[in-house]
Amino acid sequence: MGAEKVIGVDVDPVSVEIARRNSKRLGVEVEWIVSPIEEYFGKGDTVLQNSLHKAGNRNFIEGKIGSKGKVLNVIPMMFQMRRVFPFHREEIHEFPVELYVIRRTRDEEKRRS
Image 1 (tube, rainbow, N blue to C red):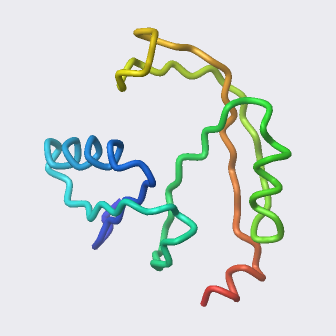
Image 2: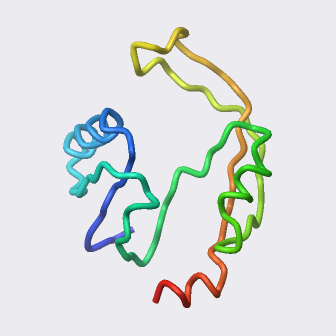
Image 3: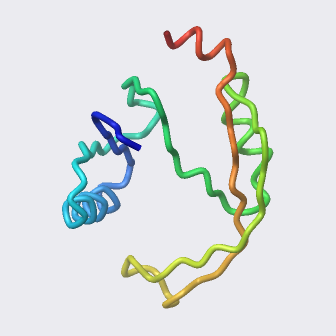
């Protein structure tokens, strides 16, 4: 996308370490930060967030968003997760998820500027 600077944020240090290795292997420069996203207050032009959620959690997602954003679309799909961590029991686990398209409200945009 031609970004001047890329920052990755995740609460899980193991996931950040895996992402750090992958970005290095791919030759992509990323500043990785271990932090809950609600405690990270950086600014950016574009935010890409993992918006896949286990199916059936729309009320929870909308409750977390509150008046800060609006769910524009929910796309149901099946997701296959390969065994990554020692606590995963299956080599490949398939389960239903929903991809959320969420836009920040104008009031929230004004508050953050």
